[in-house]
Picture 1: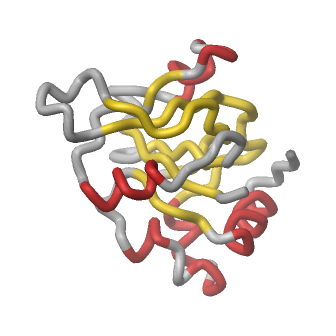
Picture 2: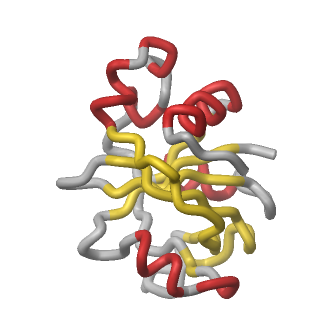
Length: 139
């Protein structure tokens, strides 16, 4: 199993929107960065991801799982970009802010910190468990 972080602007697609989709989940569409796209191509069913509200909130608010692997993104008229489908599985007990992440030295290598512009980034198993603990969340 691999771990990921999905960034979304809450005004465009929020954690509440994701929760409302239930077991059907939602395609993570609109990603046009090749590196983020390659991250999605590497995903497998059952992989877990943090749901991160970007822009003003800048915090991890929930956990999703991948329920459909990479497939073409219907919002891309060129047919070059794809998406995965994710389902909300759990709220973070305590949202973990970017400020909290940046003050934790053990998270200095986290892709969210190093590659802040990417919308989909990998999370190491060590970082995954540390962020879960910071968010007082158990799976």
